[in-house]
Image (cartoon, rainbow, N blue to C red; front, side, top):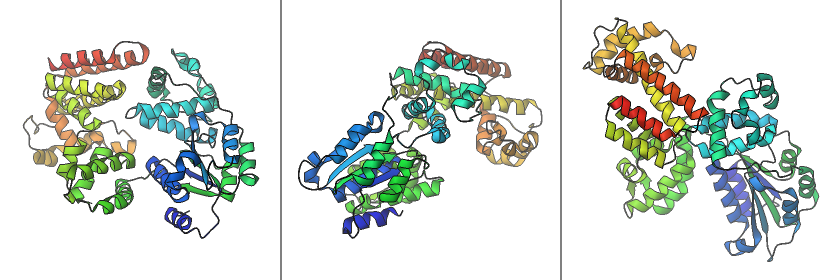
Length: 453
């Protein structure tokens, strides 16, 4: 359904108001935004203290939800019950999506990944005690496939130990709420008093669920899938920010939009938060440019990780230790930091192999980039073959030419033997992070001091 048309119809009141709404999808900001706009349309602000009720999916209780829906409003008028981040539409069918969210968010947003892991535990039936203290290693491949509906993933040793550690450290517990949706289905079909409305938000849904079909028949279902591609993400952000900017008379330059995207990866929630800060920062000035973005939004975690790896490669000990301290202060997961450092040293090692091959005799530490592009880059492509088709995205040869150029230059700072030693050290650290309780920050500091010394 078209969101703008639905909201327009609600404002005009031309059609009978639906008793229930389902807003779902990965674009969390849009889900929240439309939820708030529906509430604003249906319920005057003066009535919200007494006639607006919220329940979170983590603690959803169908008995209480139905009772609240059936109860008359405390003051005359409409009554709205909101169930946020519901798990009622989840099943083993959506488990692959949940597992992919754990993998993709684990390094950059471990808190979010832990939330998905809670859903993973609830669907599979495993408890934290079943998996922690290396008990997960006892799960056979057949046992894993059976519990995860055929997932044959062999990289669980790369993410499962880390997310177990994150989940346990936050002392999170799996909700034991009863999933008895039949009562809710019957309530929605025949018993909701006129003027009472249910709004449910969710991220993943199994459309085969009878509850989903009931809402589709008698209510409104709106889907907000995750935007793919930078252009679509930018357009979605500009559309979402349109009303906010027009109400203040502000405009962003093209460079400012791109600078925000660089800082936030065009995540709608983060980007809209940045725009609100920029509006306040620029005061009466109507035009917001990229310099304002740099001043207000500041460095991202990714920027600091990049500064860290660059400082380590350049053997700038003070800067490297300061960057590491800042990353830990902001809660960046130690496994992410380790993986970025390991990636940098893997590239240096690949570069050293290229140089030792003797085929890049024209390249030296002071070579210019244009010379490298003309005389060396074609030779590297010949040596590596079509690595992109092979899927070897971790190989240096598959990277942008400028990344290869910098790796070649920086590799002159290290001997072949030292690079092998550092890669061994990084592997040992990775194993220690996942199997021992050694202090990650101390171990990373010790590695950095060793490299920079």
